[in-house]
Image 1 (cartoon, rainbow, N blue to C red):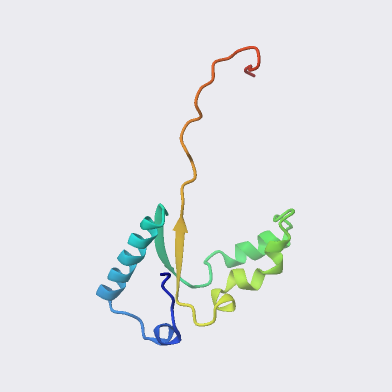
Image 2: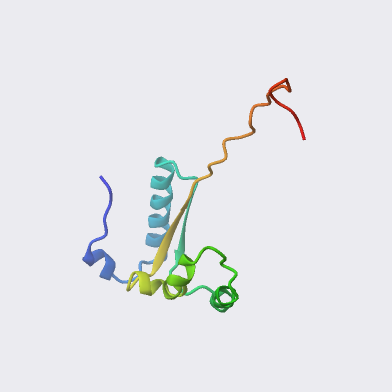
Length: 112
C-alpha cells in the first residue's frame, strides 16, 4: 500500500527533532526497499542561486531547453508548485552497471 498524505497530516505543526529523525529514517528505509540508492530531505525554499539561474536563462544558455524558461517562476519558488510545501524528498538511483565486458579485437572490431 502506498502511503498518502491527507489534509490533517499536511496541516500539522512541524515535528520535534526526534520525530523528524524517525520520519527521515523511515523514508530512507522504504526508499532502499524500493531500490533507490539515496534518500534525502531538503527544505522547500527558493534556491540560493536564483539570480544566477535567471541570468543564465536570459543569456540564452539553456540552448534548446526552452521548457526551462516556461516554468521559471516554479523553479524559483517551490510554493508556486505546491502551496504550503515545507520539505522535498529527493531520491537517487545509480544506473551505472559496471565496466563493459572487454571484447577482444577482431575483424569486426577495431580501436581508434
